[in-house]
Length: 296
Image (tube, rainbow, N blue to C red; front, top):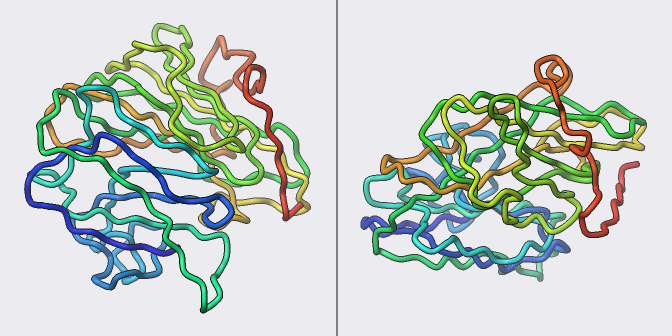
């Protein structure tokens, strides 16, 4: 994991488009975070996955804000007209830090220019963009098919309008889905295999909103032919279960990334919810994909 930081102009700015320049042959994933101060003043530094305050952290002040996420040769993404991701100015984001999770070490004679181009403007946008992330911690048992890692949280903030979604898992991920539940009715936000380009796709229900009191639920379906448990963690041998909701809002306050994470071993939809969609783990309608696991 290698980081590089860029200081922002003191003026408030809005990100309108993300154009990645990277390959899944080189990078497992690429993140852009917002920081008050970067974890280092060096041109590049090795940076971990934790929100700590060590010399190996992404942000010197610990807490980092998600600005962008990429993996599996995902394409560029432009935000809708009138929507921008606010940085600089009075926000907490004074620096942008790009984090590359490389698949392996380079030989001394090789270099890499992976990155992302951000199209930005100083013109204030009517709506802000933000992220809500659902996921799990825990582990996937050995030699198991269709293991469900599930999460649910009640939404308690300002009204948001999902405009995109992204799934992220490693080698064991088969399909990930998420829903808004209102008055017992499930509305699918999105469903995708993390083995396909991990881009931000359009939501399945255009015009959907999420209001205070709604429930947000996500499920990662995992299959393992490994002879050992696979923990949630940062390395490619570990696993991740993440569902990102990219949203717009007319809330004018500084936005923080919102999270909903549950223990995969103790939390299960069926203990709390009814009318669970039968196709929550279905790959029907998705593009064809293959799944290879070098650790099986």
